[in-house]
Each structure stands twice: as structure tokens, then as C-alpha cells.
Image (cartoon, rainbow, N blue to C red; front, side):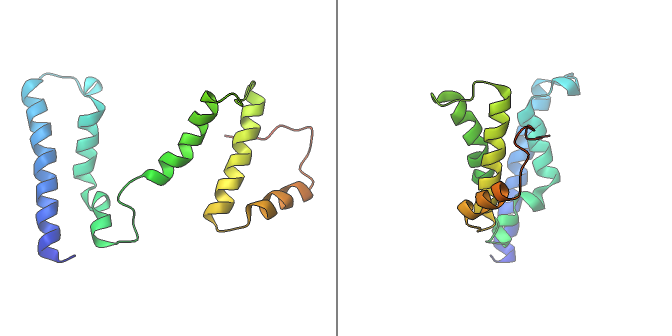
Length: 133
């Protein structure tokens, strides 16, 4: 992207963020910072980290959305809704540990079956719960 076009987009980005923050401050001049809505706090962070937020305009290998993180978090929510949900916290931890291994293997372009076989072959202690922190 040409520099002039980038600067135009960056300026519009800042104008929108500043306008919304200014309008909020005019409507709520005495609002304590603890009560400021997350949307306004997010806009302030977006202004502060504008280069990171607009990085996808300069580097096309950077995704413009956060879908990957959302997709990985959605798995947890999905298991709460389906009939195969985990009945106990312990089984939930085991299932999430397994999903973590599968997602990591997939992201690193490894064979997921081989990754699971390697874990099982390594002698993972059968009687100890998975440690997640």
C-alpha cells in the first residue's frame, strides 16, 4: 500500500476514534474512570496502538481479524452446549488438554494422530490428572 493511502486511512481511523471518545466525554464529563465502558477504553487503546491495529495494511501476512483465536475459544463454548459435554471439571480439563494438543499440532503442521501417539507412547501417568494453568 502506498504511503499516502495508508496515511489517509490512518487519519480517518484516528478521527473516528477521537470523535466517539470526545462525544462520550461531553455527555459524561464527571464519569469516574472505573465506570467508563469497555468500548471507550478499547477506542483509547486503539488510538495508542494504532500502528499495531493497522499493521495488516502494510503486512499482508497479518490477518485483519481475530478469527483464529475466536475459533479456538469457540470449541470450549460448543462443548457446553452439546450432549457430549463434560460432566465433571476433571473430564473437562482432560478434554481441553487433548484439544490443546490437537490444535497445537495442527497449527505447527504436524500429523495430529502421530502427535497423540507420541504422547501416549511417552508413558503419560494414567492416574495423574492433567495440569492446566
